[in-house]
Length: 348
Figure 1: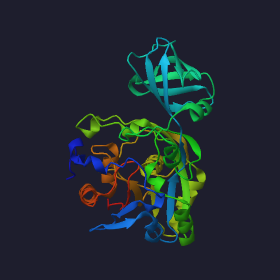
Figure 2: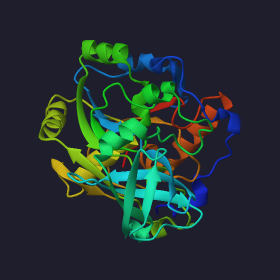
Figure 3: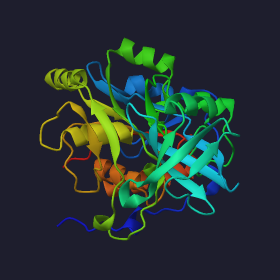
Figure 4: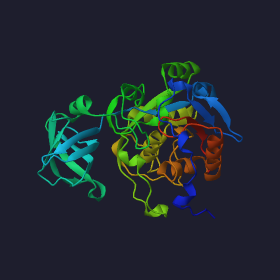
């Protein structure tokens, strides 16, 4: 009989000094915990190409992080902090989280970046009406690029710097729209990508625009009661074809990051991997039936988070908890700027 899990099952004690505040000096110099067997092997990320076989396929998320954090004030002078969650395609409108002493009402105007531009509040929107629907006075992507700040996660305690502009972004970021980086992919640099190609490992991509909901704590104890945030993703035809070719030659599909895994498994919910673009609020917990991904490259996640539940579903609850204990004992660095882990899918 399968075990009934609660949120507390995914808790662990993390010494605060293991939360990485800055990236490793070089992307591929991060540590890599090879958790495909027990005991696990402590490696360096640039070892990854040798751990995959010719004919395998790596799938990346090519989303690009936008400078989604804005500071401004209301007409009353009250300070406002906004985090743009989503840019509505083909419009000047966005959905945003807003922090203010008093929430602005529909029709109110908010001035951002020392008066460089403003926004009209159109109303509330999103899940549970928790977001604000804003219309900006210009093109959102241009305004954010010029006046926004890198949306560093809440556990990073310094303001964004030029180094963060460069390093909280993958080297192959292409499609703007994410408000959090697909962090497992931050370890890849040109040297590792070249070594993978030389090894005969194929690559493909999906796009999933990571939302701020990825950091939201699970506030209920029973997993079934948690409402997952929604994110937009696209799986191109050529990626579906690349996965089919990989399968045909006996290769393994490795997802780079939980966002890539979420996109691929969402696109296969009907039993077959379907190309196209849509929303997903997939919540992957132990017992989930994986259809696409064989291996996973991932960072170390927050206690009690939906991502802890996802990796436990993928590689097995007991093995994952044991790997986290090993990582803490060996002083691995955790979360977005931290180290990485390579996992194998547990037998169903």
